[in-house]
Image (cartoon, rainbow, N blue to C red; front, side, top):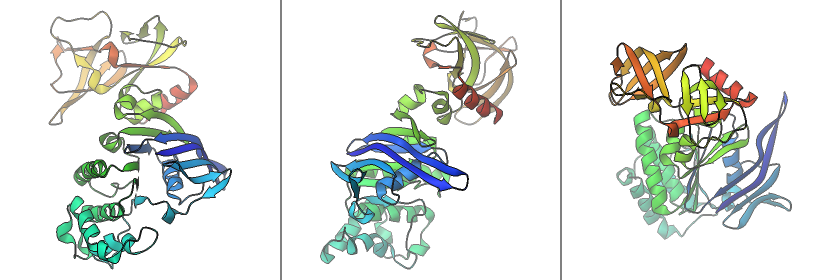
Length: 370
């Protein structure tokens, strides 16, 4: 559906050239909810704006449903209004002097997506019903809440029956509870319309909640692409692992299928590294309390409980082992055995990466920030 090949974009700043997109390749299937995620400056918004036609790449190719909308060889550039996409912006872009009806009707009355005048009311009503705002149809937009304004922007985008929806941080101005509510509506609506969605966010929870596939970007490059489950449970580097949640990192030495660390030896399946020196990662929820008397020979941590906090649906705890701070999560309160914690880790839950310069710099920076 959306094919992006060798897309490259640089910006000239006082310090020199900044590479926003570094020969990027991405394929988005028809009907897929595809999320581009990354920190500020990763290039995600530049990528979305390039697809929308609001930014002109330096080189590369963008095809949508077999139609080239940008290419530098031969030169092709289709204007934004002729690309036929629905768009939802971070700022909503709801016109304050117009009613809800007129805001949604605007693209149906003007431009390339204009329809017959007699069909406008029914199309607007249908779009507002989809976002559950039909009762607000005649209300001035200035009297709407932030969540309602966001839904007006969404209704305006879907009123033109687009096959492609582009969304740039659409929930960033909403509070946490409303964000959770609206993101569910957006995903459900996209599936109902069978639309292909390209969605930009910096929020990893939001990305995992709505995405069929996620592309994690960093400094204009694609770090990893896959399902939310793949990126969370099988990250290909330390940066991907950390982006999608906290990780307890331990330096270790590889000895066959065993990693030897200062807090114990850990076995892990399918270790395919040539490096002797590695980083071993364990997510907080994968620190499991041992039952009374159970002492595994490997993947066993003896620790001192430092603190435990009840958070309603879980406990968050901090433990010390051999001068190493471990952060954990558990559905039950920490189980002390003779004033100590005995923790087991499933081999399948262990992440191992080379202790190379890139991973080491990133991990040390991450640990210093905690």
